[in-house]
Length: 229
Length: 408
Image (tube, rainbow over all chains, first blue to last red; front, side, top):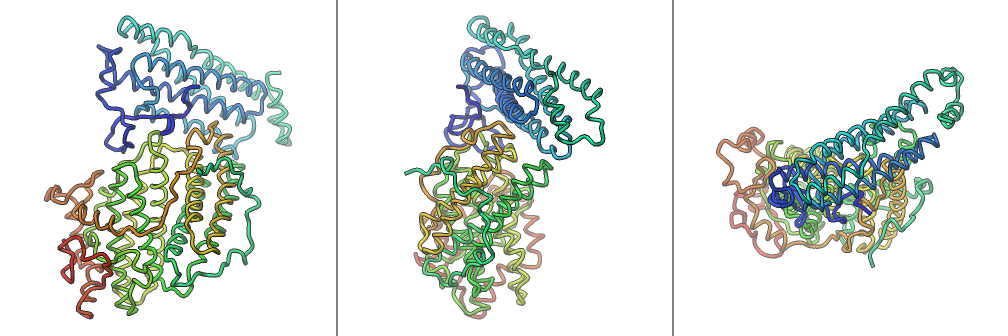
């Protein structure tokens, strides 16, 4: 089981920053990050920071998908989100293994990982904080938009790593990167989200239920449940 | 045996409402056998006030009906808990006597947290403000003798010494120097998180109390003293709240608040000597367990996270304890009286450059004199001495001994 939320009790570490105080024993020394032997010739600290950021995004993705799977009213979307939650968990494991293979600490939380978590948790919050002022159909679209944005960032991150693979030192490091990128298909969720969004927009644009003034919440819910049937 | 709060169902939140007669509890004596019973009441009142304020802030950020309803439900209960706790305060105690109890809380709570704190930076922040609250107790004690002719030791019962700390007039800092580094939510020891949340709530309640009770007095010196010390409490709230990690989400914060309340009621229950109050702590512990379960449910549903991803399964082994901390306070006073704040850092005064903003700020706010100094001068003029309760010997800082001028 990969680390789904790096915390004190999972052994999380972070690097010193002037604005942060770190509990003794939880500081990741800059020299350790810079000196990862497998990344000789590269900006090792930057690479490990980015991989921590990718792991954070996958962890947040898992939380996003679990939340949406429990809250979507449409059975097909529920199944899809649950399936993506499993994929995200697998991807966390792939990233953690890559970090380990490159001499890093999978429990390390970089500054960019913290920024990624803030961005992702705000994205997730956007799917429920304003739920009272959107109708059920729009709410489904908001959740799908969150997937589209999260998948877009994941795709950019994994595609970037794939493009960078030949720059890693030849041998175990490059092999590890190649092995990792070969296990992840970041484009599929993005393509699915894009296609599903188009479909949803089309369904709603042509829906007579949604435009009926007298449509009740039950009517709309029934409609949402049968989308894609 | 360790207490595992997530294994306890507690009382369902919907079943927690009480009648007015249950909330309008009989007050404690203004001179209870154990002054720390009053200290526990003051701390838990501040904790409930923070819970209600946090819930209000959260509620203003959402129109999600389920979340708003859940927050409203728990918040109304928290407000009932606040009444049941705070109404224990003795009606025959004056605002100044209650203030002395507040400062005893500030000293012995802060000192205990500092003693137990695993992060040296957070410990330093606690020590830094400890010396300031310690000085406030001395200033209010002198006001008490001056206007009521009584001695504060009647209230503190010699468990907390009364002698100058870092003189209050020196404590006024530019707002930019009141902000400390924050912990990182992923790496912070759970105990540190609880410590920072607890002390922030306690200082916030002290600030609220002085903000509201300062104008209760006729005497200009009393009004001035409250105004000056209330501003330091504002500094302390800024100081401590800046140590919380802004990365935590609304639901994570809700969970942490409930977990901390469970820890505090469990702690109060362990050590309470008044059986009637002990029963209240037990009841509120069971109520908080129910509220914690609801916070956990919301976290799971809306953030897809398990509470045990964020928190340890058990409470800290040692309950937060009110006890005498005389030697610790003395040691900190002797070693750290000359420390000042410089941006995010705490440094010796000798390291502040001559053009540092601290000097300019001091000049501005102390331009017409400082009520916290005036109260000691008035006492000396009237009594030929200031009031102290130094049970362990003279003040550890030579410059603060006897009837010498309380300045360093």
